[in-house]
Structure formats: C-alpha cells, structure tokens
Length: 224
Image 1: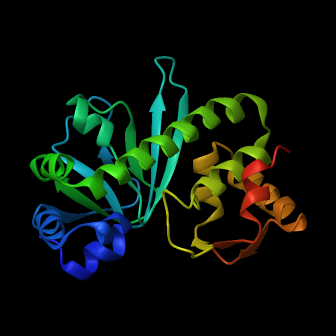
Image 2: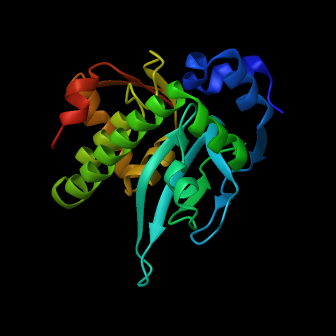
C-alpha cells in the first residue's frame, strides 16, 4: 500500500479526490521497481493494474512483424497510462521498457473501476487524459513521416512536458542523450547534434544529463 505523501507526489489527479476516494486509491496502489532495460510489460500481456510512473523513464513501443520498432511515447515520473486497456479488458498492444532504473505504481483493477464508478474528479481526469493521448498519437503519425531527426526529438521532448499529462511546473528533466535518442528513434550522436541545434535556437538549455525547456510552445511546433 502506498503512503499518502507518495501518492500525492506521483499522482496529481489524486489531489482532486474526496477523502474517501483518496483512501480507496491509496489502499489499492503499490510500487514495484524495475532495472534498466527491464520490460514492465510485453505486447499481449494482460495486466491487472492501471499503471503510473513513480520515478524513472519508460518507453512505450511496438514492433512490426518485419522487426521494425517504433516508439509510441516516452513516460516520465507523474505519467499514468493503460486506462483504455483496463476499461476494454484487453491485452496490452505495446511493449513497455524501463530506460533507466524506475519505480512503477500499480493500481488494482478493482480500485480503478471503483473510482471510475464513484468519482467525478477521477472521470474528469480520464477525459483530459484520453484527449491528450489521442492528440499525442495523431501527432506521432504526422511527425514520424514528415519531420527529420531534430524535429522528432523536439516533439518527443515537448510531450514529456505536456501540461495536462505532467501538470507540475518543473521545466528541467534529468535525461541522457542516449535516452532521448531511444525515445526519438535516432542515434545518440544524432540526439547530441539535434539538442545542440535546439539550444542554438533558444528552445532548450542542455546540461550534464539534463535538459531545461526554455520555450515549450516553439519546441512543440518545431518542424526542422
């Protein structure tokens, strides 16, 4: 069972719940650790939990029959996902891999459906979540076909600061160039070059294993 402080830290949506709803969510949520490179789930798995990122960085991806891999989304601390899979009671349609040592929050299916049926605040969160994820995946289909390496990196980085999916105001993310490359589907060297270009344009500031967003709006619209 997760502590009150930990749940509030990793789940912004929990702050809008009533005391009864919050306690139900807390009792039904636990934390599990994964090492770098470990699979949280594979395509076809049936997980009995709604999932959140407590700490770390995950990559949601899929692989075609021909062996081509495509990243669907990067997920950092504060992200919650998989509600569609839970509601439809279907197998996972993606692989989920820890890009570094990570901690994942697991909410029992029964708890998720109790909140789904009893909490107006929780349902408002889910509506916003579905809307933003839909926009994200439509955008992915667009920029994966039309943008170059720097553009893909810029869009993937911008999604990690989406104000709906990640409502905190922190604009600095601890992330390596290797991890950024894995999220954008490009090499570490290309990620390095792309970050340098974005920094020259005043969109980001690059530090040692961290990136600070200086202009999120322009970063999210970058097409280079």
